[in-house]
Image 1 (cartoon, rainbow, N blue to C red):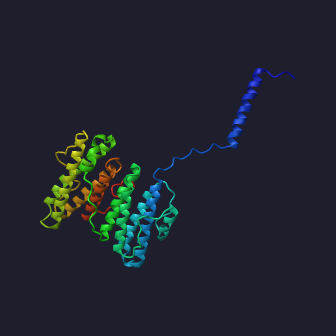
Image 2 (cartoon, helix red, strand yellow):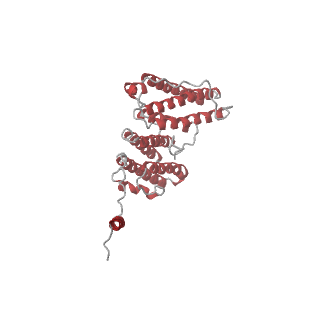
Image 3 (cartoon, rainbow, N blue to C red):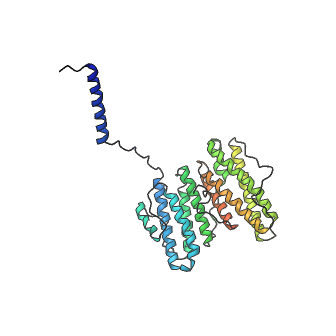
Length: 325
């Protein structure tokens, strides 16, 4: 039998190596790549527990007052949407049914804001306000995307409380010029861009409210329009000062603005006011993702949502995030 040539040995060695490699692959599948931990997980669990407690309150009030099923059912659907948005990638049971509130214990903690189970609409409104406060308490520690969601959900909670009769004035909004001017020079580029967009939206709102007021007769509605006009002027001026203090050139108002529809009477004037406020919620949801201006953005988002609802807007479950949801 002839001795194997060097070429034959090399070929056999290559085959043996290939077989060993294949065998290792078959016997020991490659381990899946580790998934990055969600830094928002503790906040999400805390928020889910609070949302489940609120869903339980809705179920209790619905059981006690079935005649209010239509009105309360719509608000409860919003809260279920809040739960879906806050859960993110966490595995979560459906919040569509009455049993959803039971998942609070599964989240690992009870809601720190939950009081006695609500039995009346007034108690439910108070529960909405407590839950809104919890959203805002976690705002600073959240990632940018979760911060947007928290600000939007807090605005929706506040609108629910108002719809349920709780007209308690929220805590005064922090002054943008006072609380943020010290760090204005260090605003990141993304924060500056979001603030410029909010300023542009305020310019449009000031112009639009001028049109709204022109078509409203003397009375409560015109006073509401005057109040909205003044509030948007004040916020516009605050953003301009903040940008200028940081060395940026504030976005200027356009020479004119195209209205989304013809305004010709009080009804269409009110529709325009609702439209302006709804558009502002999107600008302030984006601003809530910034690092330096979250608190101010969340306050502005809440105020815009409340004004939009006051003017008759049909707010989505996630004001400012409707397009993304």
